[in-house]
Image 1 (cartoon, rainbow, N blue to C red):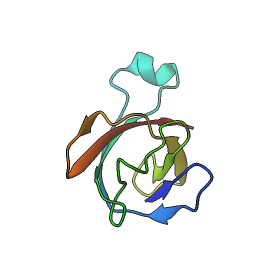
Image 2 (spheres, rainbow, N blue to C red; image 1 turned 180 degrees about the vertical axis):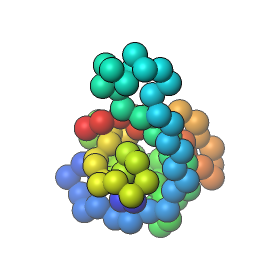
Image 3 (cartoon, rainbow, N blue to C red; image 1 turned 90 degrees about the horizontal axis):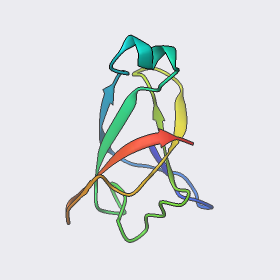
Length: 93
């Protein structure tokens, strides 16, 4: 997995990834993507520091499905945040 800062160089990070499929057949029919939530260290060495985060264009390069091709997904404001961890819900770029 890679952190892709807007206008910067992508870098490998470690994260906990939770993938949830669309919940209903109707959501699948509308083409909704799986929901992806990631947890990363609030640290610029192993994760993403909240001080460097730009929610106006930074992305995470991650596969929608295990073993699938990685795509860039926008980073919104963290859904949860502490001094140690950031939790993001990802959206397509």
